[in-house]
Length: 445
Image (cartoon, rainbow, N blue to C red; front, side):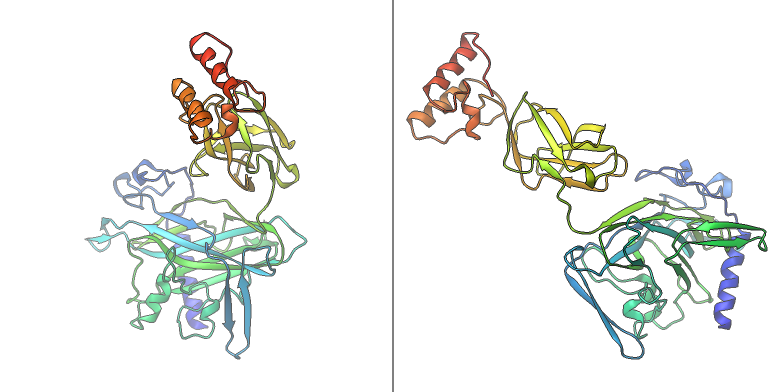
């Protein structure tokens, strides 16, 4: 208890008496902190306390599904919850790893009169969270988010410091330090609540309404602890939500009333800076929505024709954004943003022929929720029998080969029905020749 008290006091002193002004500016990958992109405090000779590239605090949902998590407490009582594609079975877990990207740079440590690395020796991570389904149970409890760094501690399988060994996320750095038993480990304070409340401060003279929250402060509390070194998306901690029904869990950084600070990192010379981050973030937990109703797979839409895109408006907030892809969703092209969430949009099909098309409907501002066509549909150019995106003499030859030489059919077949009589025959060959060489009418669809 005494150790905890001194650690809490140390954290409060560090955060309260060092430079702690807040500013969060938009950053792009590769931005330099010297451009003030991270809103960091001004440091020696006007440089930011965060040197080099902006450090990044990542909040990402755990990508693995269809596994089970078994944890036992110190009394030997075990609990099992399966991580399934949420909606298949409830309750389920939502794992939210917190990761840190930090590049190491040398700076002049004035107090010690020597060059040192800008290693991190304190993390302050106050996060607020809300959910969109108030009637369903959702918790971020201390039981499933224990403060145990030692792998031999019975609480470790339920600890925020536990390891995840996978291709995406690997070992927890804090747990690795604790496991070396050489005084390298950090101390930590975790405070969390699944309820909103009023927080009084200034001796009860003022108060603020605080949503459900998670507060983490981790700090080296000995002369031998290992400072946080360089790393790309290194696992700091993992939050575990337990959820009983479909909902969105939304997270954001927040003000931390005990010491009047925000999400920030502390450098080894006790100067604070503010990492860039992708917050606020909303994570959907629930079955895969089926909201796009047309095109939903198998349709064949002709370039230049107006087709109706339809969706279930109850699945989206207003307004929505509509995009389409011609490469199975690898990249997306805009159709309309924003547009009314009325369940229907009349689309003039563009000249982008492909048989690997999808349509995506999403929230116009956050991109979530969203839904895509269940299967691929086709955009085709009338008269383009050989599917090379051009109507020319090669298409006439292709049709002749198909009709008289047992060649391959047009793909799709509708591309060869240029006179729109419902059949691909010699009439379409004559129609296409007239169009190409005798100024005849364009192919129909």
